[in-house]
Image (cartoon, rainbow, N blue to C red; front, side):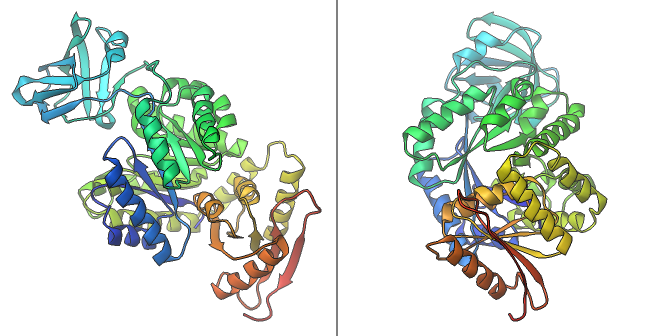
Length: 470
């Protein structure tokens, strides 16, 4: 499998046995959304993932998702339900009774500074659409329901065509970052990124706290992020096409265009890319996907993404394990029939300028492809496999390391199959990687194997072997 699976963890999937089943079904990483829950619950989620990692025997990445500069509703005692054409009041408050009162709290003053009469407000991945019809006071607006609407607590509030000028990292986000550091998360994703400076702030915080090894994921879900994509890619370790809010900022009919644009730019720049949201939305309720969802997944796979991420399907859905199972099944079947599309992805990934290190990586990858060989490498930091995955090799990359952090981080990359070996040097690591690859069945008698180790200041090392014994 080239394309990896990220599953969001939540109330529906937090039981340790469910996490383990999702990992066995194909999940390579788990995402924890810091917008929901509390540290006590998060700690249980983390423990469940790390326990599953031990039982399943493969590195699993942990991703913490920050709220970022977003506006969310306050707490509603009861959901607010409105028919199309009904008026709802949105006011500056932390909480409201909701229900028949038709009053919705927004605890962020900046929201009322930005919103104007005529604006379209979108919530809940586009299910709720409200048009602003009056602004009777600086901290209150009246909206009309464009469609039937059911509004619940703490939903993100998007104003179509506008971005909020809020701090990139809130005080709440800082607490979440501390939690991620204390619990050894592998990546932190920042929501509502607008410009490269937003990511630089997060990276600076991690560096000052002594954790520059935690990767930073830029969620592309604002108009500004799309406009500033090139500079954002310069700073981000990974880019995510966050289709939920992207589909509220832009018209739905434009989402395929923007997904294709972002993915193709990432591949041409060698930047890992994830596609997320509504891949299997119907499986929140149903045990099987729709035909359209299967086609959507196949399209993303054929575009050459590194990973696909399930959100509500696994965090709140009724069938979290089945969702992972179906996603893997569709990925596998699509990859088996890619043919010329795989060639096209590889060409797109290899047409950029390469420095000396990338030239070595490209050369050894193409050598293995020409020989139809199995590829085995040993890396201490994960830099070499990241470069290798970025040029979209046409065979699996069996990557060994003595560094669990590196293994977890590369587990979400295209074609990488990571495993642990105990080693004190590159030569020892590569020898043990070959032995372990044989033991795990990655290489068999008669296979040709190309072996190399991580890039260093010294001469590069490549060995070609024909496996004579298992």
